[in-house]
Length: 268
Image (cartoon, rainbow, N blue to C red):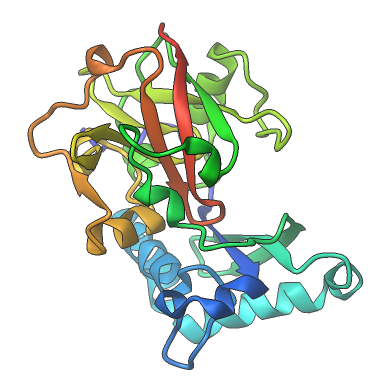
């Protein structure tokens, strides 16, 4: 079920983290050296190593170390000295080739002003959603996305996500001024993720996230939220396309934006 497509074309493994001065205030983001300005960087390393293993990229896997990853992040920020005066936060896109070449690019983003995981405490039955920022409009994909190695590992091969966004009438590149995304599901009708976030649905009294058995991406913040008990994995196969209703609240999360709130805007 997680087989490699016959002709995937050239691709690299991908992970995106965040540099943000605010992160130095959050002890849960510390690394062995103390306060860390990169969001869950150790988890990004772990995911890249796991993905290299699953793709059979032995050379890439053996080349990965935490120091090398952190050095790449710092190097790309040094190249952004002019922009560093204007922004205290950057999205850092990390790519790893089959030969083990690690590359990074940085794009300015809006700095955090509070703990980026706070939305995971939102209770739709009692809390005011406006306390947790703007809400994403989530559209349900009219078509399923088959499971493959490219849904359960993050790579530069993004056509399946672009196709889902196209079907939902969304641009390939997310627009920060248009908070919208598409909810995806596999051929068996089980919810997997959105095009840029892992997801969880509120099933009182818990936020429930799809199991990795659905073919969803094992995201870095998803892992952290599970470890902290903020979300629980779906063990009862309850998160299906047919279980989703217009107006349902969704917890959205990834390794750059943290936790955000979404709501089902329409059904397929």
